[in-house]
Length: 131
Image 1 (cartoon, rainbow, N blue to C red):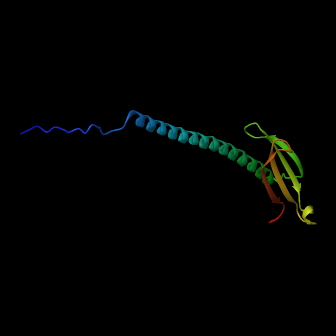
Image 2 (cartoon, rainbow, N blue to C red):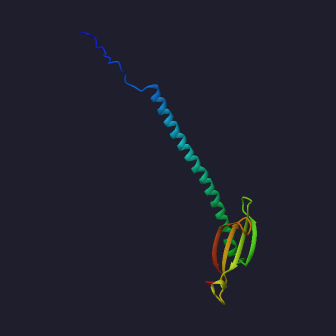
Image 3 (tube, one colour):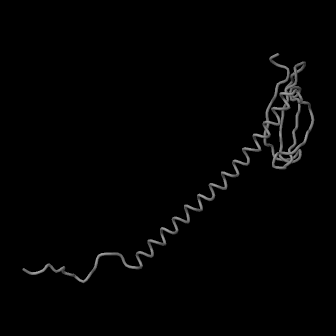
């Protein structure tokens, strides 16, 4: 009996060094792309969270004043918890709508910065209705 000998046709199965290096380069580029997208998503998420906090604070400022009955026409300023300045503008828009002899309808705008800053929160508050 003869021992089994593998016959060789002159070519071996497998990948060349160049093919392996190209595959590693493709995987590295894809990984970098995914990590960059992930980083962008994290940064945007942090921005959204910061904006959410400011909007919640703005809403609280307006609601506390409305609940205390302290809404009066004019301008008030203060600071958010992050130290940025806010400006609260209250105006009775009832007369602009042609409403006469009715309780005020307050348009309340809270802006970031001075009176010309970016509007963060705006609402209408009817005073004296519902007894």
